[in-house]
Length: 476
Image (tube, rainbow, N blue to C red; front, side, top):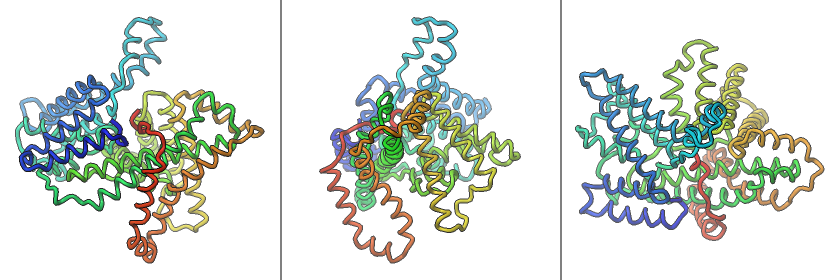
């Protein structure tokens, strides 16, 4: 079910009516679990079984990893994380591994390799698996002061299973995040009241999210469609560059839009999800970019992978190895294709080179020209890497770059270029506003008239939305 569909609007309205009704006040969590299961099963009911099965596993291993039984708790920690990763590997990476390693050896078109390659990819599995792992690990770490928030949760496995099902399946973040850590969400579970809804925050967040998705991203996708092979081979170098930068704007608007809709929807039910984007395209370094882009993923990787394998505490070379490992895993997390791994390696290389040359201090005082050049370089390097997302076939990526270098004499398509420019402007203004709002006079003026831009965005949502399409990150 798409966020930008009438079905989703009906689901939210009906769920809210039941959720806040006095007779259901003590069963609010069950109302949202039922709504979330319906949301997940809407298009492919059979895959709901995997979500339910995964939830049972996460609940069991996190419960046993938290409590002292005759078996050492670390056994349940290791077993739980291994099982979660095993399920993710089978459903998401099984086809890639079978195609790469098993099929070339056996050549059996009807054997196990073909069976594994036919395994469907459950939507959102990368997100809810990482959340399940965070629950298991946070439960194991319950002696840490941060995780003592778990002590406020009602005891007993039945209650833990209910809360786990809610945490994993809560539909605003189920399909494409933000990735929530267990210690962020569990303390919020409790009775909610209609009178406490922050309508101003919900309205602003939802309007901005839907505008970025439906007006910016959905219109840009009709222009960046031509990046696909073999269409790009007949376009000029300037058109190819324009489409590549347009796709960079599109993927931001699409994913940031989804995240904002998730935050706004969750707030209607009294829950706070973590901010996932913080104006990433004004980053002046790659480390700064990863503190602003898909924040929930980067912080998850830092908390549950980078720090446990040593972080930057074991020497320079080990730090570089750890950075590359984390970015390689982060790349493969996005998709079961080697091009995603190359994308992760690219970002890992940029982070290592930046650290080597001492350029990762984005807050250092520099001149305006230097800042502009740094922002432009980081944005361009990030934009180039998005081509690995758009063209999962690595050979097509190389061919695209080759066509940029050779198609100077081809006729440019002014319609594509103009549309990319126009639909990219809102994202440019969005980032420019972040830089301008530090000026008190401008910020005060905006607060007095902020209803105007939200009114304009609502108008364009109603009159100039692009054709409905899935969110880009649904495929991950």
